[in-house]
Amino acid sequence: MKSVLLIGLGRFGRSIAEKLNEMHHQVMAVDRDEARVNDVLPLVTDAQIGDSTNETFLRSLGVDNYDVCFVAIGEDFQSSLETTSLLKELGAKKVVSRASREVHRKFLLRNGADDVVYPEKQLAAWTAVRHTTALVQDYIALDQEYAIYDLFVPAEWNGKTVGALDIRKKYSLNLLAIRGSGQPSIAVTSDTVLRENQTILVLGKWKDVQRCFRL
Image 1 (cartoon, one colour):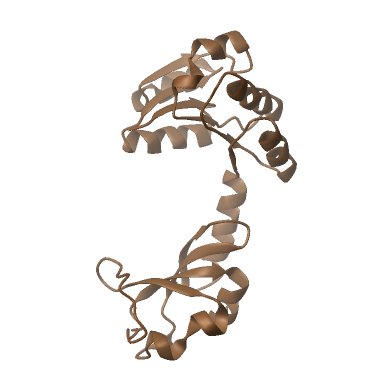
Image 2 (image 1 turned 180 degrees about the vertical axis):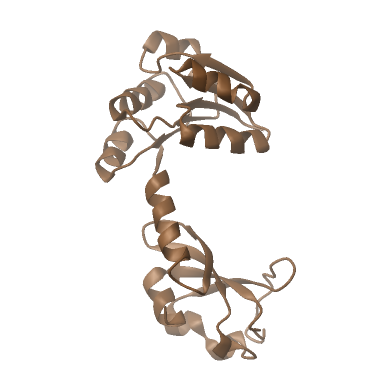
């Protein structure tokens, strides 16, 4: 169980609160808007109405006691930047801030953020990939280049072994796991036979996935 300070309770912040609640973490939620604070109360351990750009208020929360601080402010970048900077000055162990533009990410990282998330950009990228390529079920971006892709086994691969396909050598892709009707199997060898009704987890660059699966 982690102790979390969540600042900003718009749609993104509330979604974080819902997930943290499912994970049974202890959450202190903060927002200037009383209605937002009242709305999130059933999902969090405690909540306060306040201005996170006010150093006195932020200090009163004891930010250095939290395992992670989320700055989920989306509509006011100046407030997000000031809050991020103050959290770090007050001894926050880890600060994760929201950005909507690349320039915002750079400023946030320079002013105290340990990590930056792009909810809109990341969702847009997922939507574009997921719904324009029939073989891709899902994917998780690891950085700007690499991701793990959950793909259907192509029809032409049915009955072939992993060794015969040799996608690692040909396309620089790593086959991590195979899933049929049950749990994924990571016991993949060169003799493993692929079937059309299976899905596979593949690690690599999108351009290599495109070449390999002819997307």
